Length: 276
Image 1: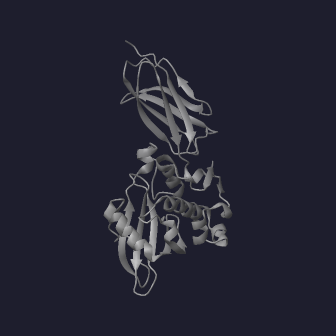
Image 2: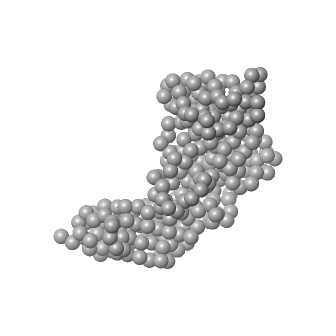
Protein backbone atom coordinates (compact mmCIF):
# COMPACT_ATOMS: atom_id res chain seq x y z
CA UNK A 1 0.00 0.00 0.00
CA UNK A 2 1.63 3.30 -0.98
CA UNK A 3 2.42 5.83 1.70
CA UNK A 4 0.67 9.16 1.36
CA UNK A 5 1.45 10.50 4.85
CA UNK A 6 2.61 14.05 5.34
CA UNK A 7 5.87 15.07 6.95
CA UNK A 8 5.72 18.29 8.98
CA UNK A 9 9.02 19.91 9.97
CA UNK A 10 9.07 22.42 12.84
CA UNK A 11 12.32 24.39 13.14
CA UNK A 12 13.29 26.49 16.18
CA UNK A 13 16.41 27.85 17.79
CA UNK A 14 17.65 26.61 21.18
CA UNK A 15 15.23 28.96 22.97
CA UNK A 16 12.19 27.54 21.19
CA UNK A 17 11.81 30.54 18.87
CA UNK A 18 11.27 30.35 15.12
CA UNK A 19 14.37 31.25 13.12
CA UNK A 20 13.98 34.40 11.03
CA UNK A 21 16.04 33.07 8.12
CA UNK A 22 15.38 30.94 5.12
CA UNK A 23 17.00 27.52 5.23
CA UNK A 24 18.11 24.79 2.87
CA UNK A 25 15.75 21.90 3.68
CA UNK A 26 16.14 18.47 2.15
CA UNK A 27 14.43 15.12 2.66
CA UNK A 28 15.88 11.93 1.29
CA UNK A 29 15.08 8.28 1.58
CA UNK A 30 17.65 6.58 3.79
CA UNK A 31 20.56 5.57 1.54
CA UNK A 32 18.61 6.91 -1.42
CA UNK A 33 18.09 10.05 -3.48
CA UNK A 34 16.46 13.26 -2.30
CA UNK A 35 12.67 13.27 -2.54
CA UNK A 36 12.27 16.92 -1.51
CA UNK A 37 14.57 19.91 -1.65
CA UNK A 38 13.90 23.58 -0.95
CA UNK A 39 17.00 25.81 -0.84
CA UNK A 40 15.16 28.84 0.58
CA UNK A 41 12.47 27.41 2.84
CA UNK A 42 10.61 29.80 5.15
CA UNK A 43 11.00 28.24 8.61
CA UNK A 44 8.95 30.77 10.54
CA UNK A 45 6.00 28.37 10.17
CA UNK A 46 5.94 24.56 10.10
CA UNK A 47 6.95 23.17 6.71
CA UNK A 48 4.52 20.47 5.48
CA UNK A 49 5.57 18.00 2.79
CA UNK A 50 2.90 15.74 1.30
CA UNK A 51 2.59 12.82 -1.12
CA UNK A 52 5.99 11.30 -0.49
CA UNK A 53 4.69 7.90 -1.71
CA UNK A 54 7.70 5.95 -0.55
CA UNK A 55 6.11 2.85 0.98
CA UNK A 56 4.87 2.11 4.50
CA UNK A 57 7.48 2.44 7.22
CA UNK A 58 9.93 4.34 5.03
CA UNK A 59 12.92 5.89 6.78
CA UNK A 60 13.81 9.42 5.76
CA UNK A 61 16.70 11.71 6.56
CA UNK A 62 15.68 15.33 7.15
CA UNK A 63 18.39 18.01 6.97
CA UNK A 64 18.00 21.72 7.74
CA UNK A 65 20.84 24.16 7.12
CA UNK A 66 20.39 27.89 7.83
CA UNK A 67 23.18 30.49 7.52
CA UNK A 68 23.51 31.44 11.20
CA UNK A 69 23.04 27.97 12.68
CA UNK A 70 24.74 24.60 12.75
CA UNK A 71 23.20 22.21 10.20
CA UNK A 72 20.98 19.58 11.81
CA UNK A 73 20.07 16.19 10.39
CA UNK A 74 17.67 13.57 11.76
CA UNK A 75 16.27 10.22 10.65
CA UNK A 76 12.56 9.48 10.98
CA UNK A 77 10.46 6.39 10.36
CA UNK A 78 7.45 7.91 8.62
CA UNK A 79 4.15 6.10 9.29
CA UNK A 80 1.29 6.12 6.82
CA UNK A 81 -0.63 8.71 8.83
CA UNK A 82 2.31 11.14 8.75
CA UNK A 83 4.54 12.62 11.43
CA UNK A 84 5.92 15.87 12.82
CA UNK A 85 9.67 16.35 13.25
CA UNK A 86 10.85 19.08 15.66
CA UNK A 87 14.37 20.24 14.85
CA UNK A 88 16.38 22.56 17.11
CA UNK A 89 19.13 24.57 15.42
CA UNK A 90 22.03 25.63 17.67
CA UNK A 91 23.67 28.94 16.82
CA UNK A 92 26.84 28.92 14.75
CA UNK A 93 29.22 30.88 17.06
CA UNK A 94 30.79 32.90 14.25
CA UNK A 95 27.32 34.08 13.15
CA UNK A 96 26.18 35.41 16.54
CA UNK A 97 25.79 39.16 16.10
CA UNK A 98 24.63 40.15 19.58
CA UNK A 99 24.24 38.74 23.09
CA UNK A 100 21.91 39.81 25.87
CA UNK A 101 23.76 39.09 29.11
CA UNK A 102 22.04 39.18 32.47
CA UNK A 103 22.62 42.36 34.44
CA UNK A 104 25.16 41.78 37.20
CA UNK A 105 22.68 42.48 40.02
CA UNK A 106 20.33 39.73 38.73
CA UNK A 107 22.94 36.96 39.04
CA UNK A 108 22.58 34.48 41.93
CA UNK A 109 24.07 35.75 45.21
CA UNK A 110 26.74 33.03 45.18
CA UNK A 111 27.81 34.18 41.71
CA UNK A 112 28.10 37.80 42.86
CA UNK A 113 30.12 36.61 45.86
CA UNK A 114 32.58 34.98 43.45
CA UNK A 115 32.91 37.67 40.76
CA UNK A 116 32.64 41.42 41.30
CA UNK A 117 30.75 43.77 38.99
CA UNK A 118 33.76 45.43 37.28
CA UNK A 119 35.32 42.04 36.50
CA UNK A 120 32.02 40.75 35.09
CA UNK A 121 31.54 43.80 32.88
CA UNK A 122 35.13 43.73 31.61
CA UNK A 123 35.00 40.17 30.29
CA UNK A 124 34.74 39.70 26.51
CA UNK A 125 31.67 37.88 25.18
CA UNK A 126 33.22 34.41 24.94
CA UNK A 127 34.76 34.44 28.40
CA UNK A 128 31.61 35.92 29.96
CA UNK A 129 29.51 33.20 28.30
CA UNK A 130 31.94 30.53 29.51
CA UNK A 131 31.82 31.90 33.05
CA UNK A 132 28.02 32.01 33.04
CA UNK A 133 27.84 28.43 31.74
CA UNK A 134 29.97 27.30 34.67
CA UNK A 135 28.06 29.43 37.17
CA UNK A 136 24.82 27.88 35.94
CA UNK A 137 26.14 24.32 36.09
CA UNK A 138 27.84 24.70 39.50
CA UNK A 139 24.62 26.21 40.86
CA UNK A 140 22.79 23.00 39.87
CA UNK A 141 25.50 20.65 41.21
CA UNK A 142 24.68 19.88 44.85
CA UNK A 143 27.15 18.06 47.08
CA UNK A 144 26.53 16.06 50.28
CA UNK A 145 25.65 18.49 53.06
CA UNK A 146 23.50 20.61 50.74
CA UNK A 147 26.18 22.96 49.42
CA UNK A 148 26.34 23.69 45.73
CA UNK A 149 29.74 23.65 44.06
CA UNK A 150 29.33 27.36 43.32
CA UNK A 151 28.79 28.22 46.99
CA UNK A 152 32.14 26.58 47.85
CA UNK A 153 34.18 28.67 45.39
CA UNK A 154 35.76 31.45 47.43
CA UNK A 155 37.92 33.55 45.06
CA UNK A 156 37.97 33.79 41.28
CA UNK A 157 41.51 33.62 39.93
CA UNK A 158 41.15 33.48 36.15
CA UNK A 159 38.44 33.10 33.51
CA UNK A 160 39.17 31.41 30.20
CA UNK A 161 36.77 30.69 27.36
CA UNK A 162 36.27 27.07 28.38
CA UNK A 163 37.10 27.02 32.11
CA UNK A 164 37.61 29.02 35.28
CA UNK A 165 40.20 28.79 38.04
CA UNK A 166 39.13 29.57 41.60
CA UNK A 167 40.16 29.04 45.19
CA UNK A 168 37.78 26.72 47.03
CA UNK A 169 36.60 26.32 50.61
CA UNK A 170 38.12 23.37 52.53
CA UNK A 171 34.63 21.82 52.74
CA UNK A 172 34.65 21.15 48.99
CA UNK A 173 37.37 18.50 49.23
CA UNK A 174 35.49 16.42 51.80
CA UNK A 175 32.10 16.95 50.14
CA UNK A 176 33.49 15.85 46.75
CA UNK A 177 35.02 12.75 48.35
CA UNK A 178 31.65 11.90 49.92
CA UNK A 179 29.89 12.45 46.60
CA UNK A 180 32.30 10.02 44.92
CA UNK A 181 31.61 7.42 47.61
CA UNK A 182 27.86 7.94 47.09
CA UNK A 183 28.21 7.54 43.31
CA UNK A 184 26.93 11.02 42.38
CA UNK A 185 30.32 11.99 40.93
CA UNK A 186 33.20 9.89 39.72
CA UNK A 187 36.94 10.18 40.22
CA UNK A 188 38.77 10.77 36.91
CA UNK A 189 42.41 11.30 35.88
CA UNK A 190 43.78 14.82 36.33
CA UNK A 191 47.01 14.49 34.34
CA UNK A 192 45.68 16.59 31.44
CA UNK A 193 45.33 19.60 33.77
CA UNK A 194 48.46 21.60 34.61
CA UNK A 195 48.85 22.71 38.24
CA UNK A 196 49.63 26.37 38.99
CA UNK A 197 53.18 27.16 40.07
CA UNK A 198 53.89 25.76 43.51
CA UNK A 199 50.91 23.37 43.41
CA UNK A 200 50.56 19.63 42.84
CA UNK A 201 47.79 17.51 41.35
CA UNK A 202 44.91 16.69 43.67
CA UNK A 203 41.85 14.60 42.82
CA UNK A 204 39.60 15.37 39.86
CA UNK A 205 35.86 14.71 39.89
CA UNK A 206 33.26 14.62 37.14
CA UNK A 207 29.46 14.61 37.44
CA UNK A 208 27.53 11.63 36.12
CA UNK A 209 25.61 13.45 33.37
CA UNK A 210 25.68 11.70 30.02
CA UNK A 211 26.42 15.04 28.36
CA UNK A 212 27.57 18.36 29.80
CA UNK A 213 29.55 16.91 32.70
CA UNK A 214 31.00 19.33 35.22
CA UNK A 215 34.64 18.49 35.95
CA UNK A 216 36.38 19.92 39.01
CA UNK A 217 40.13 19.30 39.14
CA UNK A 218 41.81 20.22 42.41
CA UNK A 219 45.38 21.42 42.98
CA UNK A 220 46.92 21.42 46.44
CA UNK A 221 49.94 22.98 48.18
CA UNK A 222 50.95 22.98 51.86
CA UNK A 223 49.71 26.08 53.65
CA UNK A 224 47.87 27.46 50.61
CA UNK A 225 44.18 27.47 49.60
CA UNK A 226 43.15 24.63 47.31
CA UNK A 227 42.64 25.75 43.69
CA UNK A 228 40.10 24.24 41.29
CA UNK A 229 40.20 24.10 37.50
CA UNK A 230 36.50 23.90 36.53
CA UNK A 231 35.16 23.09 33.07
CA UNK A 232 32.19 21.52 31.30
CA UNK A 233 32.82 18.54 29.06
CA UNK A 234 31.20 18.48 25.63
CA UNK A 235 31.35 14.69 25.14
CA UNK A 236 29.99 15.12 21.60
CA UNK A 237 26.77 16.59 22.98
CA UNK A 238 25.91 18.63 19.90
CA UNK A 239 26.07 15.65 17.57
CA UNK A 240 24.26 13.19 19.85
CA UNK A 241 21.71 15.46 21.53
CA UNK A 242 20.96 18.15 18.95
CA UNK A 243 21.84 16.06 15.87
CA UNK A 244 24.30 18.55 14.45
CA UNK A 245 25.96 17.14 11.34
CA UNK A 246 29.14 15.44 12.51
CA UNK A 247 31.35 17.00 9.84
CA UNK A 248 30.17 20.56 10.56
CA UNK A 249 32.14 21.25 13.74
CA UNK A 250 35.91 21.47 13.91
CA UNK A 251 38.22 22.54 16.72
CA UNK A 252 37.45 23.07 20.42
CA UNK A 253 33.89 23.39 21.66
CA UNK A 254 32.71 26.98 21.92
CA UNK A 255 30.88 28.23 25.06
CA UNK A 256 27.81 29.00 22.92
CA UNK A 257 27.73 25.29 22.00
CA UNK A 258 27.97 24.38 25.69
CA UNK A 259 24.92 26.56 26.36
CA UNK A 260 22.98 24.72 23.64
CA UNK A 261 23.28 21.27 25.13
CA UNK A 262 22.94 22.50 28.74
CA UNK A 263 19.56 23.87 27.67
CA UNK A 264 18.69 20.76 25.66
CA UNK A 265 19.66 18.13 28.22
CA UNK A 266 19.35 19.83 31.61
CA UNK A 267 17.08 22.89 31.10
CA UNK A 268 19.70 25.06 32.82
CA UNK A 269 19.30 28.84 32.57
CA UNK A 270 22.72 30.25 31.66
CA UNK A 271 21.72 33.92 32.09
CA UNK A 272 22.39 35.01 28.50
CA UNK A 273 20.64 34.92 25.13
CA UNK A 274 22.29 34.72 21.71
CA UNK A 275 20.97 36.71 18.76
CA UNK A 276 21.75 35.77 15.16
